[in-house]
Image (cartoon, rainbow, N blue to C red):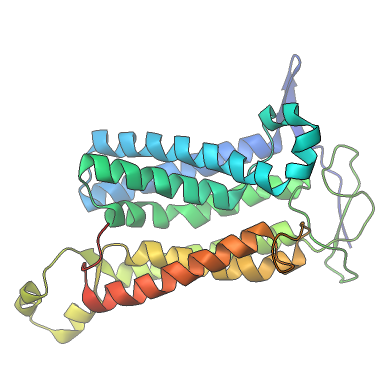
Length: 279
């Protein structure tokens, strides 16, 4: 058994307590922003447009993350409505979907490609999620179901969010490792799939068939991220504590299945037809 006795509060400034979760979340957001900035420069997105899109994504992600969490735990918040305004309590899928919806709206208004924005975000997203899971490990939130496995974790600090003294699956670590695996896979694919906006006729200018095969339409990396992340998240949530939402599945698992059902066919169609599907 692995004992975790870390105080979730990193430090306090007067009455303001700063949790480790907030620090790791800030580090995660910074990581995603830095990597997205680098990818945006590669994709030819102007700095002004990038920061405008980032502001939309941040606002949409924060709003939806809180909304999905409140819906998922409505029985609690219905009797404790003031706790909705507390800094903790965020749904990761809400953040992802809210940010993507906001970016889609910005892309429509600005006349830019949503798929290009998706590829810009895709590489840094799983790495940022992995960093955020470090905060979950320390805080004890998102904890796993009880287990007798030798690598089970036991939380002992009184401020921990996890039940004290109970051997649990280290679900947060499972998610962290899966996020790193997704990042590694996308990084490899990014080198092989060079997003392009070539028309079907213009590909005849490429001298080698192998080179043409490497060119993939914009959005391929983004859709691969959604498919890989959703697949792993769906399976790992069977080892994480949560409330049944539909057919015995957690809310996030239902969302994950919906994301998979949309992402995989879109990825196949776009890779076969190029940029035929734009919205």
